[in-house]
Image (cartoon, rainbow, N blue to C red; front, side, top):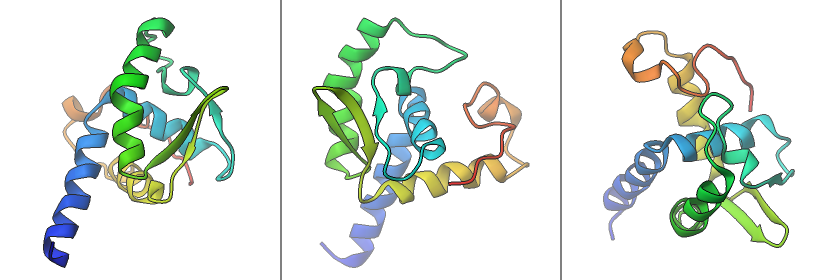
Length: 123
């Protein structure tokens, strides 16, 4: 794979990951945490505005969100206790999400209800 193809793949993974509200919430929770801290699941992935049933969320995390984010090295997680922490490529996600939050010309229909809209968070 050429470096251009590798770069395109990295961007595809960032966009694909941030396309999910659950995954954005998880990234946001990790941004707010200290860099070496691990967070409890499913709580770290459950939006304060759109609370999901913890059992359903846990199933979705285990079968969809966590494997995808782990394969991309964005996060690391443990099953017992059920926790998540930043992966080696976490900064790629956090910087993109924070850049979107800081840009004030994004149409409101794309950011209303988004976890970070209106909040300033420093990684």
